Length: 95
Image 1 (tube, rainbow, N blue to C red):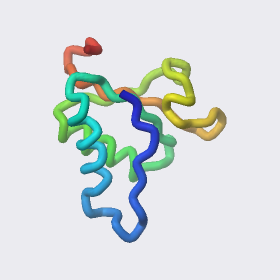
Image 2 (image 1 turned 120 degrees about the vertical axis):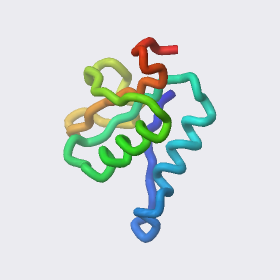
Image 3 (image 1 turned 180 degrees about the vertical axis):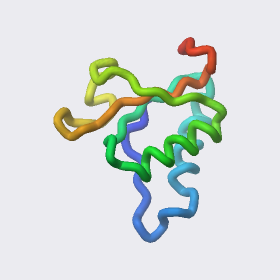
Image 4 (image 1 turned 135 degrees about the horizontal axis):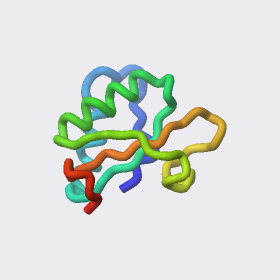
């Protein structure tokens, strides 16, 4: 499963809405790994990803930039995006 964009208006940030959105997406496909991309210097999103990973009892790790198509991740080259995969099966085997 690919997550391209999670956005919460500034006035509503810090209330758990981003985590709720990610969890709702994960609940739709509970056996699939989740691919997403973030910019390395976006520490708020990286913190959210860590909370999300923990909340669904999964593990997150970086993957090579060419592992997924840019269009699947909704990213553009040259913008310092880093792809990640959240492994739902902690053995490391995609399901």
